[in-house]
Image (tube, rainbow, N blue to C red):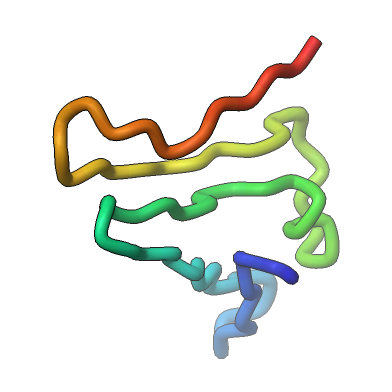
Length: 68
């Protein structure tokens, strides 16, 4: 499931990127940028992914990930 949607605009080559915000009682999580999802719109630069999250209550653990 894609969390980013590319929408064409009347200006040639200009796309509007709409993002899906996932919310619950803890706060929200949103994918701001993902090169894999934006490749269809012509994005070819080296940034892979950028996420944004907000946690309502101090000390809340939203998820733990390990990558090597």
